[in-house]
Every structure is written in C-alpha cells, then in structure tokens.
Image (cartoon, rainbow, N blue to C red):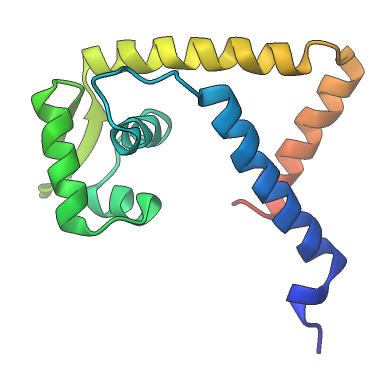
Length: 145
C-alpha cells in the first residue's frame, strides 16, 4: 500500500502549498484598506474571485463558524462592500456578491497585487511564462479541481 505522506510527490505538494501561501502573503501585504480586518479582506477576496457565494461556502473556505462568518458579513454589508442577492431559481437561497464599492476596492487591491506579481516574474522570458501557465493549468486540472 502506498503511504501518500511518504511519497515524493506528496512532499512536493506540501512544499509547493507552503510556498504559495508565503508568496500570496508577500504580494498582498499592506494591500487592504485600513478600515478592514485581515479576515474581512480575505472574505472580500474570496467573494471577488468566486461570486456569488453562499454563507456556508465562505464559512468553509475561511475555516470560520457560521455565526462568526455571518457577523463578519454583516459588518461588510454595513460598510457597503458586499450585498446579498436572491437566487431567482430558489428564492430561499441567497448569494453574496461584491457591491460596486466592494468591486472598486478589490479592483484596486488586485491592481496592486498584479504589479507586485509582475515585479516578481519580470525577468522571465515569454517561453518561461508560457511554461508556468501550462504548469498552473495542469495543476488546476489534476490537483486543485
């Protein structure tokens, strides 16, 4: 039987995942508005890339209890950064999206992050960038689906 925790591929994925978290931390450092807590920023970032999302999806992704997630979303709604939208197919179900102000804030944050990312990979050739794109596509299809 193959023990995945001892396989070289598993070791590589653990190292890769840790490196992804470190790079993400580096390029997002100080990008959030001073009016937001780090948790609120992470919630907005998740909504921005996955909207519309449900309360339970946010709770699961952020590793937060439902009451804490609900409280943080209430604060973000009060700051007019996100909004609840009713699912037309099931009126009992609500999705959470960014408001126009939230879209603007996250757009500015992503521009800063994009600049920092470009600085990080600025020395890469077009071929290397293409190879990285293919590698990311393969990881997305085979590991992070």
